[in-house]
Amino acid sequence: MLTLIKHRGPDDEGLFVKENVGLGHVRLSIIDLSSAGHQPMLSSDERYCVVFNGEIYNYLEIKSELKSKYAFKSKTDTEVLLAAYQEWGQDCLSKFNGDFAFVIYDRVNRSLFGARDRFGIKPFYYKLDSERFVFASEIKALIPFEENLKPNDKTIFEYLVYNRTDQSEETFFNSISKLKHGHSFTLSDGKFTIQRWYDLSSKIHYPLSLRPEEFRYELTTSIGLRLRSDVPIGVCLSGGIDSSSITSILYHDFNQRGLKTFSATFDKKDPEDESVFINTYKHLLTEMHFVSPTADSFYKEFSGFIESQSEPLPGISPYTQFKVMQLAKGNVSVTLDGQGADEMLGGYNYFYGSYFKELLKNYRLLALLREAGSHYRKNSSKEAFSYFAYYLLPVMLKNFFGRKNGCISKEFYKNHYKKSTLSADLYNPLSLHDFFLQHFEYKLEHLLKWDDLNSMSFSIESRIPFLDHNLVEKTLSLPSDRILKNGVSKYILRESVKDILPAPIYNRTDKIGFGTPSDEWLRSKSFQSFIQNMLNSREFANRGYFDVAECKQKYQIHLQRKANLSKDIWKWINLETWFQKFITR
Image (cartoon, rainbow, N blue to C red; front, side):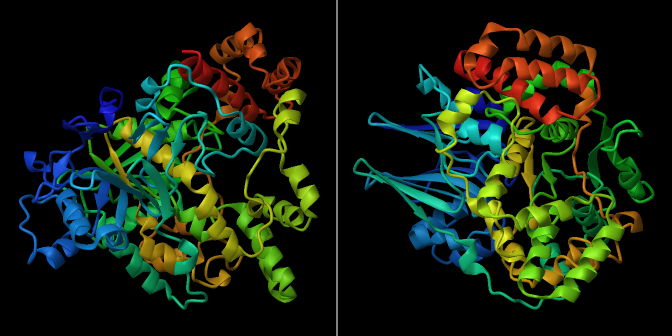
């Protein structure tokens, strides 16, 4: 198991084995690089043993609170976590500000307690049956325990039809589950129980009055906590407002003149190229690093990339982040990333569609006309209006139009369409505020999973300042017009950093992030040959997921540039390659 996830912790590894309990850990040294940080770690009285992935950012404050009762031997946050559990038991979780997944073994009671952070930044997968309970930070470490792995067709259906992953505790493997974010578990006397320890909705105090300078203070405080490290830190700079805000705050508020940034660029003619925005920092920063993924590099690496992810992905864009992390390897051991800002600050066009619906429902017609007009003038994309119309449809029509064909076979569709348990709220937002909460509950986690897998593939810890729970709780308590205003998203963030953000980025209304020109990549000669061979293979046809004749027809349409069907095509490639690597092996 440790060998299969050694990339997550190349600096050290350890084992604790006692009777029928085994705990293993591979360490990426970030805080206290000495051997004092070795895991599994025993408490001072040797009653408790912990394996811990992640960081407790406020460990110094907790340590100060506990130092009169506990004699700390190291400078690690792991030792503070153990002492906090000794002091407060399971209530220690509410004390932690961090990204974490951990398990503690009580050697006296012979019981296990484990937990995962509030939003699912750090992963926790497990396999439970009558014989054993096995857990790991990545699915691939659990695979040796299953001789005959079977796919989870319900998850595959939701992936193909609704473009959704990671919305529940289920995975793409029938026998492997994940501990949901904000949940903990106990295993005692053969009984496994799961509890919810954090509920974001109960922490929202709506409406909260928060000025831009107060938002800036909260974000800056979060960034400051995430600078606690004994190894170099850099920033993944995409050119969007989120990562640019982090970069500008580090430069101006923390005086990080030697800051290293890592970015992806493409050919200037590609709409995914962000270099014009990234380069606004060239007069400030001297340690800017760039990578330019291509169709050829993706063709050579896509098989290994799919293996690194363990589960299928709805699109190719995470590959760009994968390349950015590969670029960062050897330069830094920690990166700061802008994930999470879109989900709480309305970064996607469909959030504006939801806001239009909220204004209409509350009979705020003048505000609706004003916002709709501003949004229309300032945004080249008119998606928000399509979503607005969609959200006004009856539920039955919403469900119909929310589905995607993707060349799915009629038999597979017929056998599974009634089994889906997707949250209907993602297609029927009652208000902008509720829509944000639904995203944190059901939709954010797939992005965090890719962030973790991409960074850890190259032994890098990714830290996410926007997902400090204090910042999230206050932001989601804001009135809608503090987030979406004057036709643009992220209003309070923009206003909070407008004095330090480059003007072209402050004025941006589009969103790309780490995108990829996937439509052209899948028309390349290498991919043409690969895809046509796959579509003609007996294995692909026998899976039963796709109508092969329709797939062939759609691919020709894509090659002739009559439509961009790259998202559908990628799913054929991804699912088939995943089957070969993980199921049929």
